[in-house]
Length: 84
Image (cartoon, rainbow, N blue to C red):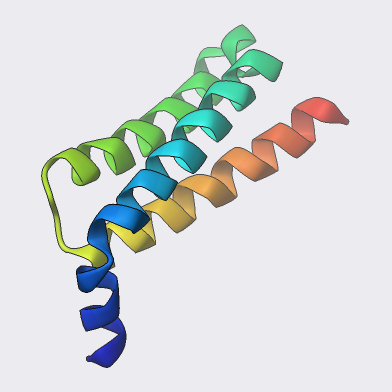
């Protein structure tokens, strides 16, 4: 319960960092090769837009953290695939 209070208390700092991280990593992944295939483009765009929509909707920080973690994982895996 205390961790949730800290994340809610620092909501605006966490949101600004997540917008920067998720937006830039998604754009970099699309630019490195996800644009060439519809399936990989969907794998990058859907989680990224879901995270940004949750941030815009002021959803609970637990939801935002879970979706952002999944988005960063998917983007990082695809970015590693495109760079290799």
